[in-house]
Each structure stands twice: as structure tokens, then as C-alpha cells.
Amino acid sequence: MDEKKTLHMTPDDFRRYGRAVVDWIADYYERVESLPVLSPVKPGQIRALLPPEPPLQGEPFEKILEDMNRVVLPGITHWQSPNFFAFFPANASGPSILGDLLSSGLGVQGMLWSTSPACTEVETHVLDWTADMMGLPGKFKSTGSGGGVIQDSASSASLCALLAGRERATKFMSNEKGCDGRLVAYASTQTHSSVEKAVKIAGLGRQNLRLVDVDEKFALRPNLLREQIQKDRQSGLVPCYVCATIGTTSSNAIDPLPEIGKVCRQEGIWLHVDGAMLGTAAVCPEYRYLQEGIEYADSYCFNPHKWMFTNFDCDCFFVAERAALIHTLSILPEYLRNQATESGAVIDYRDWHIPLGRRFRSLKLWLVIRHYGVEGLRYLVRRHVEWAQKFARWVQEDKRFELAVPPPMNLVCFRHVGGDEVNQKIMDRLNLSGKVYLTHTKLKDRLTLRLCVGQTHTEERHVIQAWRLIQETADGVSKS
Ligand SMILES: *Cc1c(COP(=O)(O)O)cnc(C)c1O
Image 1: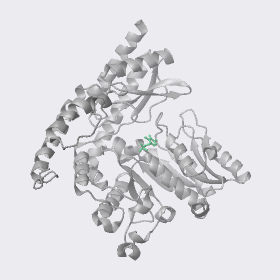
Image 2 (image 1 turned 30 degrees about the horizontal axis):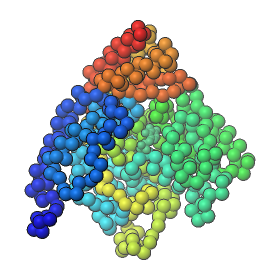
Image 3 (image 1 turned 120 degrees about the vertical axis):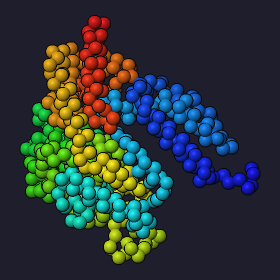
Image 4 (image 1 turned 90 degrees about the vertical axis):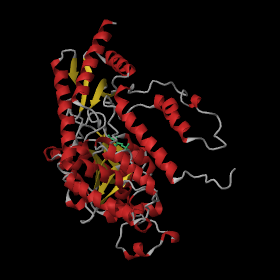
């Protein structure tokens, strides 16, 4: 090895290759629409393109970038394609990518205020902005009794909320002694699977998760919740957590927060509200009815990394009483002691989530909000909802299809009237075509197609094309 030559990338090379990477990404966005949305590769196909051993000597950057095209791209399902209508979106956008790059560039580990004050203070401020922007109650702001923090995912947020609810219900003794098998959590049959995972991780046990039945719109039935809680109390159990959802993953159902909230308030149970995808709609004042009753919540989360044009990972988690969360999660080994923390004048976000370390994630959200402005975000959300509603009307007007449930916002659940097998074939053929990607769910035991309009780059023409492809594919399936 040449002793005089640095092994590191020099600032000049970084500029050169950095530009090449930005160009690569910009080119990708220019052509992503033409790529097959769902990756067609077979298991193992990508690995087979990689050398069995890591390189002993460093390789030229050009060669690495070439492999992005040769090795990586074929194995990408294009979440950033405007023809992506599957699951819920995982949006990226120019300002968000650049915000993430700046975060990488600074390479900050923001576990404590003192390990980079800006990392904490920008985050606190941006989350207060976000609370205002979404019309959330003042108690969720750092200027009130609560505050917001960016978590990696809604799954983590639900887990942290459960832990805080568990501790509050046991006067912070579960942290000391462990769970005694009497703690109970509640959600609906439609609640995201992350809540079941949280119940397992938090030591409640899956048997102590009550999945309450739903109404014809797949929303939790609050009277059943109340009955179940009373029954559990009579059996000597300790209800500690209710998770309600704004926009379930399966069908975008909206749980009745005012009724659920009243039950939780009366019973002294922690209410967590999960608005992972649909929560973004509240940026528009006319859609805030979706979160009516949010004032009853002890915690709330939504994912800008789904519908708000911010790269994964970015979940905004708000608590009404930060003291409960901090008391639940704080640890203070000697090596983390510092004056700022002791003074009590600062936030140390390591006490607000599971990991100790944290990236400067608020930069990407900050850039998104500043680039689009609140009005820009509203404009985009409104158009997505408008197009989804149009799509739903087309479904209704075509005798071969039906809506599985009236679509509340930007997710349309629909099916061909020919039954499960026909719907499965339609979906498989559509996805195999590479021109569009949508996924399914089961509602009342029937296979149901889901089309979610929310991808950053989706335009009306993409929704029109998706519907045309669905109709043509249905014709083809009927004939075969
Ligand atoms: C997507 C989703 C989640 C999980 O989101 P992650 O951020 O990936 O953990 C949780 N709840 C609902 C309602 C979702 O739609």
C-alpha cells in the first residue's frame, strides 16, 4: 500500500462522485415511470450477481455506480414509481432526499442535547410546527405538557406508548418487577399487526391483547370495548392500553375516537392513536374531522414517511404528558452524565424511544415542510383524495366491479364480482405486467383489491391508466 496516499475519499473526489450520485438519482426519477413497478426477480437472483468474497483492495467508484444499474436496479420494486398503488406509499421527494443527505453528511449522533444541540432543537421545533400544521391539541407540543419526537416507525411509536401505558397503570412498578400477567391491552380486529408485536415485546403476552370486533365500516365498536374492559376488571385484570386507528391498513377504517376516548378517560387507560398513513390528511383543515376526539389521546403518531413525501424513516410521535414517557424509558449511566442534562433545561431524546442513538432525522422533514410549504402539502393531498374518489366512482359505474366499502379518503377497496379466484388472477396479471402495482386484503373473508393513491409522483393520468389496465385485465381473465 502506498503510504502517502490517503485511503479516504478526498473532498475533491467526494464532490465529483457526489455529483455523479445526485445525477444518478435524478436520472432514476426521470425514468422510474418506465420501469416495471414490481421487481420480477426470483429469490437468489441478485445475490448470484455479487462476488462471493469482499474486495481485498478498494475499487473505483465508477465501478460501484455501474453496479447500481447492473445489480441493484433489477431487484428494486419501485416505490417511487407514479404507478405504485400497493400497500400504503413510502414516499420520497427531492427536498427529503437532500435533507437525508445533509444528515448523513453531518453524521451526528443526537442521543443527548449536548451531543448536538441543533439535532434536538430543530426536531423539537419542527414537531411543534407539525402539531400546529395538523391541528393537533396544544398538549402535544413541547410548549405544553407533552411534545413530539421522531421515531423510526409507527411500530416503535405504538410500543413506546404501550410501555408508558403499562408503567402508568402499575405506578411504574412493571419496570422494576416485570409484568405479572394481569395487564391487558385493547385494539380492534383491524388494528395493525405492530400492536400484537408490541404486546409481545412489552411482556403483556399475546393472550392479554383483546381484539374488539368492528362495525360494517370496519371501525372499532366502542360499546364492546367498554364491556370487555369491565369484564376484565371483574376478573382482577389491569387494563392499561387502548390503540385506536385513523385509517386502518386493510381498508382505511376510522375508529370512533370520541366514544373510545370517553371510555379511556373514565377508566384511566392510556389511549394511543395510530394515524400512520391517513394522519397526513389532517394537514388540510377540511379533513380534520378524521381525527375528531384526538384531544382524548395520551399519544398519537403518523408517518410522514408514508404520505408526506419524507423518506423512510420518519414517524412523528406525540405525547400529551412527556413526563410519563420519560419516566418509563429514562436511564442514566455515569458516562452519559452532563451539565445540560442535570440542569433539566434541555430535552434528551434518548429517553423518548427505544434506542440510545439517533440520526438527525428532522432535517428531512424540515426541508419537506420548507420546500412545499403547508399550502403545497395541502394541494398534493387534496389531489390524491380527489383522484381516489374519482376512481371509486368509475368502479361503481362498471357492473363487473363493486366497492368493498365506501372509501373514506385515498384508499379504494374494490373487487370484481366474479369471486376470489378472478380477483386473484386480475391482480397477478396486473402486477406481472409491471405497468402498475396494487395489493390485496381480505374483508369479510373475501379477497379485495386495494388501490391507494398517494405516491409523490402520481398524476391523474396514472390513475386513469391504472383503471383502464384493470378493466382490460378483467376482460382478459373473463375470456380465459
Ligand atoms: C403502515 C402502518 C403501520 C406500521 O408502520 P411502520 O412505520 O412501518 O411501523 C402501523 N399502523 C398502521 C395503521 C399502518 O398503516
